[in-house]
Amino acid sequence: MATTEPEQQISLKLVVIKERNKVVFAEAEKDFVDVLISLLTLPLGTIVRLVREESNMQPIEVGSLTSLYRSVENPDKEFLSTDSCKQMILRPKNSMERYCKRLKLKMDDTEPTEYFVCNNLVNCRSKSPILISMFKNRRCRCGKMLDKPISHESSSFIDGFVKDDDTFFITDDLKVVPNSLNAFFDLFKSCGIESPSSVNKMTVTITKNQVIDLLKSCLNSTMTLTGLFLEKPSIEKYRKVEFPPFDVNENDSFKINVKIVQRKSNGKIVFAHGKEDFADFLISLLRIPLGGVVHLMEGFSCMYKSILNLDQNYWTADNVKNKLVDPGLVPQFLVSNKLFPIFGSKYFCCTEIKYSTFIYGAGTDPYLTACFLTPRHGKSVRGFTDVEFVDPILNRKNCKNIVKGPTMYMATDDLVVTPMTATSVISLLATMSIPFSDLEEKEFSIGIKEAVGILQASLTSKSALTTALCHLLTQIKQEN
Image 1 (cartoon, rainbow, N blue to C red):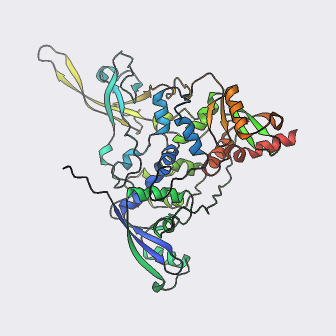
Image 2: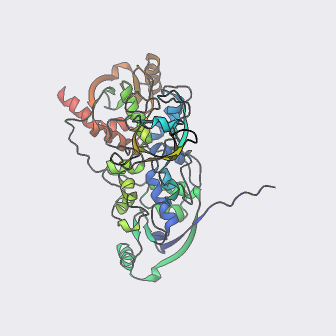
Image 3: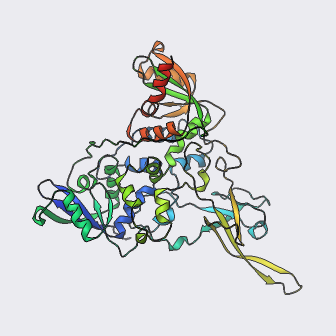
């Protein structure tokens, strides 16, 4: 009989205030801190997919992002350019998956990203840029298939995020604080605790399901550890997230033209409609990493701010913190969303060539000894060549859309995206029991300020468009 492997677990020591039944902090080692930090690397689409599943806590919805995810997932309304594109949106790749590879409790179950180059790369390497694909069925300029796997530089030597010999305090709202005597006293002082007799110590074990619960809890509560470990039956939605104002000079920013259909009686948006670029923008929200969301919103998260302040000496590599607090996208998605200032690394292909002398004759026979992708700038280094990702809809050269076109797309207030037809509009209005006489249509352009507003609202509101675009609706009303 086959034996099943025991479920991986991580131990965590909690310090709890007796009278208030509240966690002061947890004392954690590398295993837990790495798992906690890895939450920032998860794309929003992955988070939506994880938290809607049953665990020790009930499934939850993430604002309007859950309905946006369902509209892409709906098999009855196939409107994305390709099935591969659909999979990239529903199971978006993690740009820091190499750092998460050795986590003791790994949340992201997305298949690791694979890249392929021409099997005749020895001869094609001089033709810059080198063509790279995520799929084996693409062709090189030379006519051969792109079917030779190519790895990331040093991918097998990345051991998570923080060093193995450090320990940390994790506060109830998930601040990550290096373990020190000063930090120890400050945490007690901040909770008004003057005597060790006021607290209890307890050790808990964490499984993958509990990390999913942790993710659910931190989306709704500022008392995350208390809600997770001190026997609360469900997530209490008492958290009101307040985002800092987002100021940007929009003079030169990219704009998208949209029309909104609004109710005269209450001012709420029923739906908005626009071309493929509008649908692309909304759908591409699902592949932005959580750390990128927080970065755009100037670090409203306590965990994010504490990581930003964590000294460089605690990290496994020099560039890890920068990638976490200002993360990029996987290379294939660099152009699909022009409104957000989130970019991926510029990649290069490193090829190392050696030559063997022919037995008969004076020529030499070149062969590859190494071939890997690297974000390291290599224009001044021999063997480094620019790369171009050739997958449909995802490369800089073609700049095609995620959704099929040309057509018009509509998005409801809670971000259900579908192709716009007369029947779909009639069906929506009938479902909401809205008479035609209560509707008016307005047209305007949205830029990065409105894009960030929609992203913010999508995390917390079922009326994302009305919440995010209320300032435009007010302007329109005043102008009229």
